[in-house]
Length: 219
Image 1 (spheres, rainbow, N blue to C red):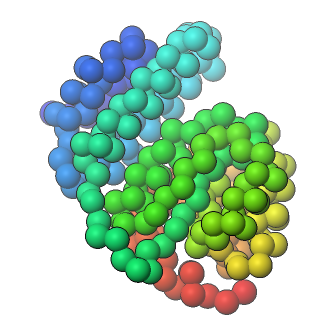
Image 2: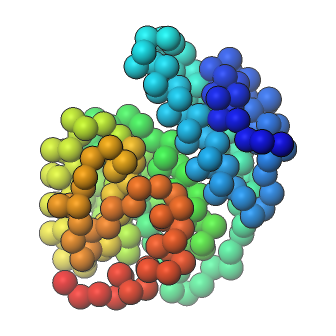
């Protein structure tokens, strides 16, 4: 079966959670969940966003589709999560959307990728005020902090968050993700402890190949 993100988008817009999950299950096995995230769910939601921008669907339609997509991702996580043996040195990652950012599905999918690699994940969702993020960071001390922003006018807020995170005393690696990474050149945000990853495949590659070097680097 040839994957059709537009078909999936229509199922989301029609509120057909069961049919959407069944459609993805027809395409999925233990080895290609990442492909479904990248090649089906992400483009389906981008398509829905474009329909909203063109006034072809309403805000209510977009919210319904997002809610259905959220439930489908959660069910896929339960169906296809590869349980890993907990190790004494298990790494910790904290994932959040910057303050006022409402998009969060990419964060949920990133959480799934980390979990499949045996990480302890704390997914704090979108629109997290900076002072609450810092309190959690200083108490939990994650090795990695993943920050997401989707819209260009969140750039000043993203910069504020990054600066604050870089000032914590234990020097976590900071990953920037989200739709904005594909629309804007964020190279100026990249430093030794700040990494820009455009998609989930980039995240998977970093986990497989670059993580230890980045995390052991000194500032």
